[in-house]
Length: 173
Image (cartoon, rainbow, N blue to C red; front, side):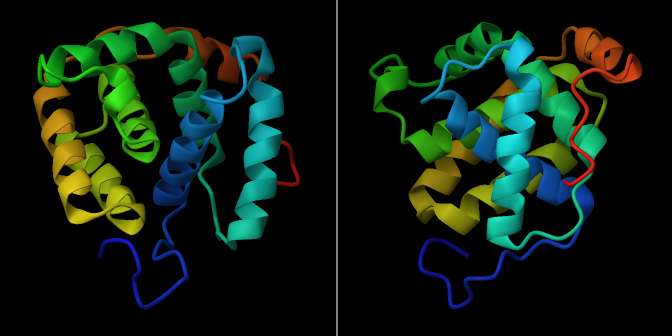
């Protein structure tokens, strides 16, 4: 689709896709605010407000909570994976911030969850295509495909948080 699409409406009706879109928004927010796992509720509240502004419908709250919690706890591992797969001539600082946000959320899901790799990559590439030029979308796709072999941890710490009722989305979301 690319930037400047005919429609300003977000093209997603799936709760999981909406959760992934908000996870990308969360990854972007993390670059400007020093969130930690203790701040997960605050970040989720911020994203709930954003959901309303963007007019998103259903959001899979459990998936969003798991992705964000995992991203917060594995931030440095995720960035190490990205660094490992970009050209040696590049640094993380050179990557477009939206591309970086999409890659962080996508790699987090590849790293921490059992979701089919093709589903994860397709979803995040679709999200990237909503906000980025084709060359950037191709870059995101390439990095996610290179990183798909990395599957560690499976997000056990976040599952514990969700199971214990901590860090759940506010009811208003």
